Amino acid sequence: MRLHVESLNHACVLLSVSGVRLLFDPWLSGTAFSGGWGLRYENPRAIERAADATHLWISLWHSDHMHEPTLRELARRRPDIEVLANVSHNFSMVERLRAMGFAKVDALGERTPLSIGSGVMVTRYPTAGIDNMLHVAAPGASILNYNDCNLPERALRRLKARIGQVDLLLANYNHAGKLFERASDEAIQRTFFGSMARAVEVMRPRHVVPFASSHVYRSRYSTAQNQSLLDFDQLAAWTAHDPRALRPRRGVGDGDPRVGPRDPPRRERTRSAQHRTRRPNPLGPRVLVEPARGDPGHPRDRQAEGRRAPRVRGEAVSSGRCRARRTPRERG
Image (cartoon, rainbow, N blue to C red; front, top):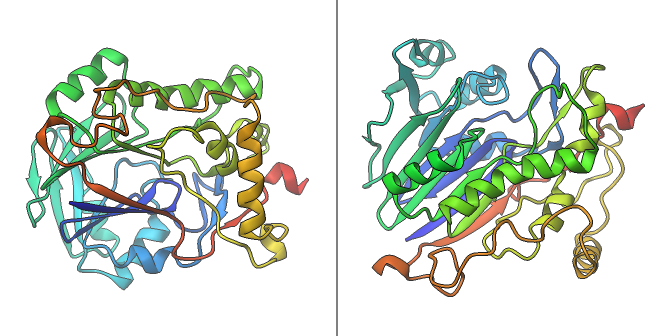
């Protein structure tokens, strides 16, 4: 089984498996939360890649996940995309998504597997508040979009017992809201990166995609928090020695003054990253979790549990140029 995962921006990922191309949470341009949040990176071709999806799932109501301008543009280009709309006892996304222009909207209940074709089954697991995760079971592959969920260890162990070995885990690694108590930037980074690391430690996936964390705060009340957000370069340093981590990366910019100075050539950046990883990392651990030998997550145990591990091809915003934006604080 071959998986292909492409990070388009923030929490938006295009997952291809068994002929199904499942798109998650597209926020691809503009701002969220009434202008309070912006995207750290640009990916001008993201909407073209998103329009190639066969299915769409929105994890929660927040506008960095259910981004109406992006969704309306996607519906204009692909009104026939099959939308999986969360439905629970006290809410339904069906009507809202239909109003945006999507013609095929199917209800997705709680903890009930739904077939979306080609042997692919999806199951939604709600957690506290409004967060949801999605388990995708394909022939020979298991993918968990953990998204913004933050379960305690005991709940994670029960989840693992229910869904079994996970081949690909997608999880966020940054804070996503106002911090009422400010520790040092490094301490804040350790705390939220540690939440992802805990999920990795318990779930023991074969591959990890850190995502849903490419935002910046634009409000004058929150811009100081941008300094405690991990960017792609820091994330690469923190996960440099974990072979399971499929890290997002930036493309080479074009010098557009609206998005900051031109990025250095890719070859120079790569050499600099290699140089950095040779030195002790002052920010945090170099691996998410060290997998134990005999554990399915260990790189030498790719055929654990009697089946061959799927080949995962990861691309991050590589379908177009992804340019770093200057944060509001950097703009002065």
